[in-house]
Length: 493
Image 1 (cartoon, helix red, strand yellow):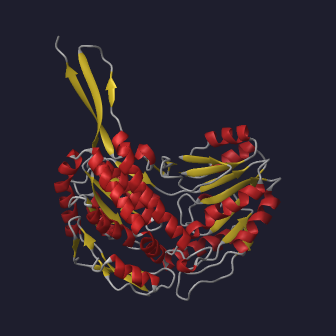
Image 2 (cartoon, rainbow, N blue to C red; image 1 turned 90 degrees about the horizontal axis):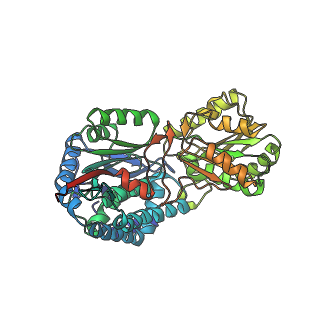
Image 3 (cartoon, rainbow, N blue to C red; image 1 turned 180 degrees about the vertical axis):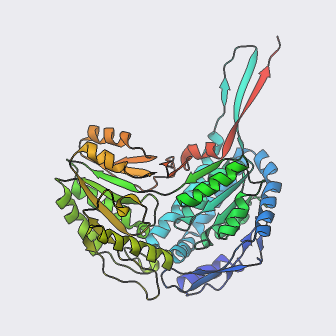
């Protein structure tokens, strides 16, 4: 960036329409004037928010080269040294928390409370991985007194990180934090639609004292991403995004013999069984869907409810939808805009087709927001057929589908009537029954009588089937961003 955090802070507090600076490429050693620029729009107004660099293939190559040059010395540093710098970065993120939160809100559209929560979580990722990396132990394998076998965890080398537009502050921190902790040098490609906080992280990393080339940020679109994943010097790629693009990324990276970590879409279900406490379930179900206007891969977008509780649940959910407010994120609405006009049209298409398929609108928010912004009023649907598009496909918008079933077995079958397997929740006061149901779900995370989309920093996170493979978060991520190396010593008597 070309100005100080003080200047950025002042602009955000004054709600300036366009930020008074350009956001540059960051190659780890400092910012760099790019060859090309991208007009980054504020989704709440449709107006220009900032001019952002978009990296060319040549600039991507330069960033990867910087990471390659920095990787050996960074890997050789003691875990305590790497951990200290990560914790220092976490502290700097906390120092600039309000500025970063407002920047995330302007960039993504989410309400300010959610933006603040995202930045707090991001700081935790840097602090968490900076703390636990010193305790990641290898193994010794007992083979008798004539030999010694030791397994150690070593970094891949250069890791590429493709970050989506819905939760860039959190997702960049969780993947980069784990990768850097393990001794990799990172090259991060945030989405064109929301790259600003990730660029700020790179600047704060320099302030924290990270060596040049260890943390590089190169915003851009498909061309930038292709240049990153096809570079033979990139040893591991983590991708969060759509199923179609994820498959292309995995195939491309596998074609040159390197591993990937994929966190893809979701169509997560709440299973509301007989005996569920509706007064407890309904507010959580509503929030899990309305969070960030439904633009969350873990959003609980389907509710599979026992027919005896259907009417009570709909009555409890309806006020959350009918009373939802829409507006720019800094005004603290219930729901902010979706990220772009294209996304708004996509969500409206789902709503129109669901009605044509016979689903019934139970409650819908009043239109609102800012003229020119990308707003979609939340909708609660009942009588959603299991054969319908709305039941099976990811909407990525504030649309909740309710489907009634007559038994636990039917609920389980309905939950699996989707190609996704990211998260799920079971609501039932009979804990034994709820636990049995949760353990039968083919998902990466299952909750009982609660729902925390994505879980916490410490909880391994990832999916099954079309939701991807590999695990972010927790200690599991450190193993994803490293590889096992076995050392064998033949001890001569």
